[in-house]
Image (cartoon, rainbow, N blue to C red; front, side, top):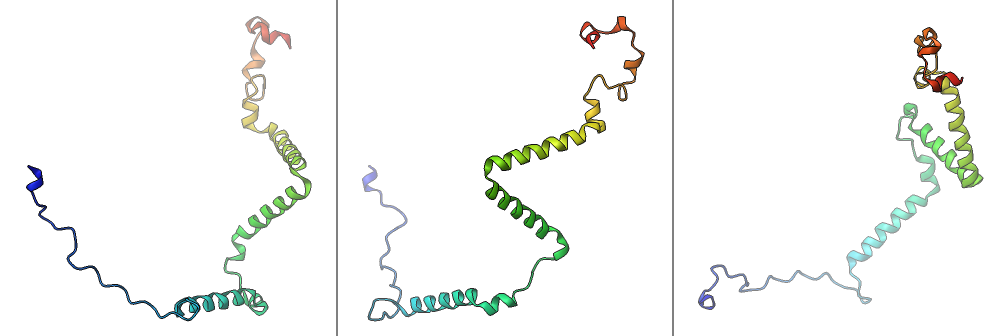
Length: 139
């Protein structure tokens, strides 16, 4: 039976792995390494909040790239959205898009959508009344 078969690979270690050496602990139970980490983080925080550091910062992006202007525009819109409230901002957006569509009505793409526009479909001028469909006679 299978109980008599021994595995060909022994998966248990004869000797356990040696333990890692423990770092020395202070009286409060913390290691010297944790104190070094805290000191390093404290230095970073002080550097960030240093007023002289703020005056030394330089702009890393190309000022002519346009990305800064786009970001400023988005920020301005976000501030306006918060100041006006969601309803007023949505109303202004609707008006802006409506005016854009009205300005775009004279474009060739919009004129092609109107089946009765004779500037795009001059064949409409040559039609006789008998050739027109009953629905088209109403105008």
